[in-house]
Image (cartoon, rainbow, N blue to C red; front, side):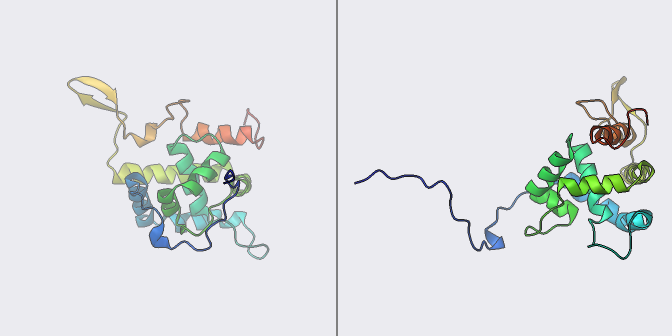
Length: 191
């Protein structure tokens, strides 16, 4: 009997029924956030806000603004420091695909698409969008104040949306976005 050798490449499945794909639990945070965004016509707001920055006649349809900004929110909430990381995480997660509105069989946007959209939209649009999201969260989730009292001890509230900062860097969402733009060479550090 001869020595069996492992084949370096396996042939990919030709057809995989969706029933055979693994089922994962839904991500409660993103599910609730998506519901709140839908209730406040987030996608319509974004499309109206971003229309002046797109041409109506040339090229293929771009990534919807709602998908782009949801991907930025994912990057911020999950501590992802690069657009490649954001794109990879969104492509890899069933629950994030659902948050973005993509079917299992659809490809999510590539990091280069995120770069082009970010270059197209000015910082003022990003500010308006993040302010809109924080306003929704503070109204709907009853987020008031920066501190809560427990047994007469002041501690930072986990749910204080206006004061959310990244644990690793201490950045708020404006600093996070600005750092991404500086690292990509799109703005100078003084801007």
